[in-house]
Length: 229
Image (cartoon, rainbow, N blue to C red):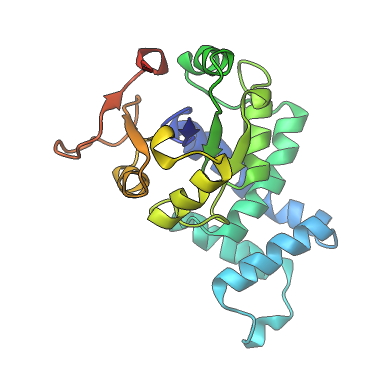
C-alpha cells in the first residue's frame, strides 16, 4: 500500500487552515532564532537552489530573503523541496508542544492496523517532506500512527506526477509494481502510478475537489471498503 496524505488519509482543510497558517505565524521568529542551526541552513540552501539564486547577487542571504521566498511559494501553492523542508522544521515545534494534532479520517487507524496485521507493507508518498510526514503521523488525533508505516517518500524521489517516481518507489518496495496499490485524490498522480504499472484507487473525501468522470480509476470513500484478493 502506497498512500498520499492530503485528501487521502487526512483532510485538505487541516493542511490549509491549520498547518500553513502556523508556518506563516511562526516563520520570521523561527528563522531569527534558528538561523545558525545546521537544519535551518540546509533547508535555506535547498530553497536557494530551488529559486536558482546560487549564481545571482543574492549569494549572501538574510532571514528576510528566505521569509519572503517562503511566503511567495506558499501563496502560489508551490510544492518545492526546500519549502517543504523548512515547513517541517517549523511544524516540529507545533506538534511536539501539543499545539497541533494531525487530522486523519476515522477509518484510517483501523485500516492501518488491519493492513499490517494481514502482512501488507504500508508506505507514504507525499509532497510534504519525510521529516514532516513522520511528525504528522507521530502526533495525530488518534495517537502515534507512525509504527504502522514501513517507509516514506517525498519530492526528493521525484514529482508525484512523474511515472519514473513510482517506478523508483516500486524498486524500493522490492516488489513488482503491479503488487502495489497507490491511493490518492489527484488524477494526475494516479495516472503516473498506473503508467508505472501500479494498481490505483481514487480517494473521495469530504472537501476534496470534484472529479470529472472518465478517469478510469476505481474510487473509494472509506478505507474499510477496500477488499484485497
